[in-house]
Length: 362
Image 1 (spheres, helix red, strand yellow):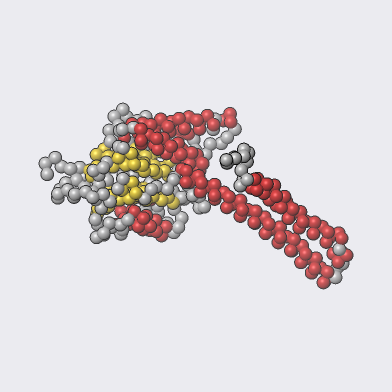
Image 2 (spheres, one colour; image 1 turned 180 degrees about the horizontal axis):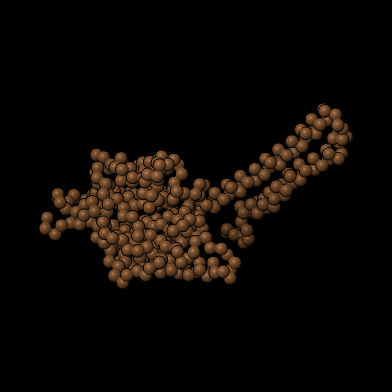
């Protein structure tokens, strides 16, 4: 017979008991250093002498005390910094959780580069999920930086992760995201009302999110709804081309969505081809002379006789971006690469493949 004792598990007891000990040690060390300095100054006869040797000894004692205090403060700050980084890493894993390397025959890889040095998350958002309706992908960019942008990105991503599985049509998924964003902005407006005494980082009235929704069916057919976001690029052999040239809808937030939310047919993603989704920080990145970064040129270096893996595309593009901006990008940058590794029979010449619809009369 196995008995289970109620209460706090034994594995947790030492941690709870260790916290008061750590706090006591954190206070005891500077107190001891101060006691040494005070005891030497008023209790040691050598400290009252004016001889040269006595002054050297006194200076050495106080120098050692000051050095000990500085090292103690530095050690405490480093411990707090490590704890803050752990919290940021946990928040990043929840907000921008690592994507699975393979989704329904598609190879996927994504990464983000934050403009704030030392920050691990920003206002960019992305997600890819395999559903019964196909692989659905979202890529977005929230206006601004800071905690407000992170909260907005979390609201949009949380809604997408549910709506992508529930809604059969891509337009209805976008409607769910728009309503979730509106609710989030209303709640934020109440929180940041002048009566609360808080200063808003970004006015809610100016908040918006550029968004791109993609749906890749089992046969490679790609449908998309674009709300003010850059169109992704298609990598096909040595060719780099935009997925579509259709005019996007306005970003989410400032304007109501149109009643007709029909997804745009973007052709078929053939076997061996890749889609590269990105935020505008990639093409808006400038060097010291003010020249914009050429993303198609950087992508062209990754394609050749053999299709590049999504990880290789990310490495090449981010290396080129950091070199172009001298390691200091002015905006957050997110990239998501989808490579079709399914076995499709390639369509005859002239049929749709890279961002072209299949012609009616081949």
